[in-house]
Length: 265
Image (cartoon, rainbow, N blue to C red):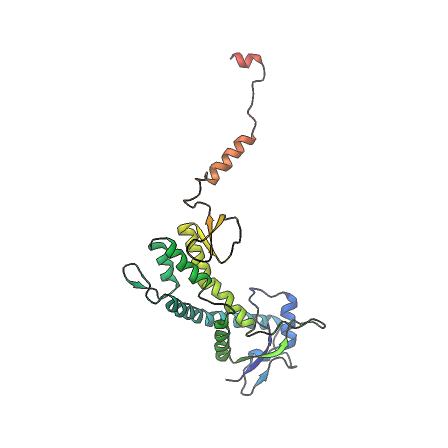
């Protein structure tokens, strides 16, 4: 497949680019990015624009969508590989093996929720991915190979006098992949844990929030537990509707008798 070179940070993990971001990509890269021919292309070179900006925008968003679709099964495969490395003997529900994130969500609901399970969930969410997101660099390289893309040492949104970003492995497609990991793996686990057991698990003390009443240190591993409203360890809370009703009643002054005649009646 012919290789197309794109600027760094060309693909942004945003549902909609600003007008400035879209224009900079359109006029700097033009239509060649989406026209594969049988010789290598430099999508950053000057070229004759043959598509409208509306057509370019549609093709750009389709590219972003395609990257997301290619990333999803690869992220899920990395998740399962890491899970099996950390918990090779783990089973739930009378011997079932975890084969995907949805299986693990079932385990969170079905299995006894104790310190052992807390540590397992904490490891899956906060430990087993490691640091540096090197796995995402590998996934990025595979996706770019499939799509016939390479990075060029230019920055599409970099203005004159603005310093380049610090050099590191991977670029904007890697960033999109890391963000997708959160949506595909970590966020469903977080939501299920909060819904089923009224807890969130953290690497550090992040403090209280709208849903978290307090944060305590875990006793059997290095981490923190967010105790959400409705947790059985918290005092019983008045239902929100009843609390609002009582507050409204307290704020409304009682009508008193208008004269002594009414008191006698």
